[in-house]
Length: 400
Image (spheres, helix red, strand yellow):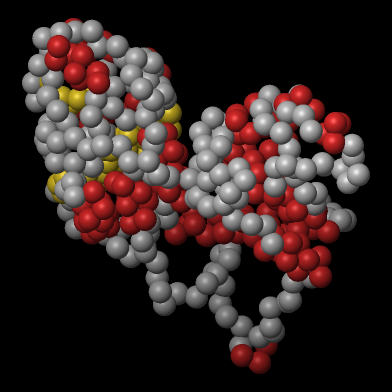
């Protein structure tokens, strides 16, 4: 393939570099890691939760960075949850590290813990068997022929469905019951947002305190996952005064991100260094590449690192639009004319009227900022540059 234009040349160079990096990683990382990540927020029979979907998406991205094969389920019904678990059960068999993360509602009954899909109504204890998913069932799937197992539960919120079940004679209890680690493999680590039989209040923010602390800790280089989770638990307790549960039977240190601090930085397969006299300095970036990187450096950051969703308010870092979702903004008006000198009566209309914006149309526009991210600076947007930056991140999240 011949790269004739400056942008094409840059893309070619990036593809070659990324391919070389991936080749190096595949050789160096023989360990197989598989994770199931579930997050439920949009419940049908109880108020919507704020954090679980954002938390689950961010945890999934973090685990991908740590070389996990990740199966994700967001706002799933009972049957959809069971389908994801079945996929996980097939994929996780024989993995060196198996991981499970859940954020959303859960409850306990007679010492057993149940995760609650979004369609669960729980009119009585019989419906619990058919509408909820027992945690032990998932733990059993991740224990077949696997090495180390990691379990993260951000599911200790006060639960109206548990109250309803109790009123119907189900005798469900507050919070989660103590989770027992399955035997075998290289042991299990279990971390929960609170101790047994305790509940916590949902905190408004980019992430729940527990999941936010996990995100900050579990990717730390050369730190065992047990130590990383203990730090996350300590940070959570300092922020909330609730002490998370951490139980570990792991054998030896399980390190998710091992970095050889003495090794040279190499792209592609390692080759012997040439004699000192034969070494030549690395070529300087071309003028085209330098210009593109200079443009990229001017792209403003958002005020949040979280995944972006269509109908969830966003902290853009721009006071004029902060705290509004895409769904809200496209029903509003532009802040100024998209074309200089245009009569106000032409452009002072709701954005959805002049652009015929729907979620699908907006998604198509957003995708242009992923494939050519510097285009966010090409033309000023009537809702500001950070709006286009957020669109690009939304598109990376498959326009959820």
